[in-house]
Length: 79
Image (cartoon, rainbow, N blue to C red; front, top):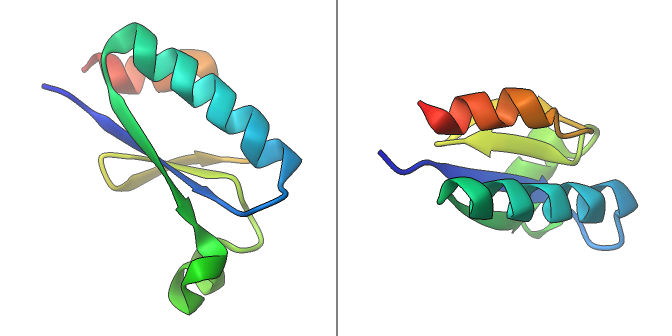
């Protein structure tokens, strides 16, 4: 089963850029896909995630926020 990671992000967010680099590397290692959603492009997304970005979703479910926990993300993608 292939998993998908979504990075809830915003423009000019240094922590978001770092998370994207880590997620890209981990997904490449494990054959998972990933994408970025700009929370500021949608008022509902901004209300839900705005104070916590970056937020990481795995297959649409919230997995974590602020800092990628590599071991935990790898375990979720290995299922």
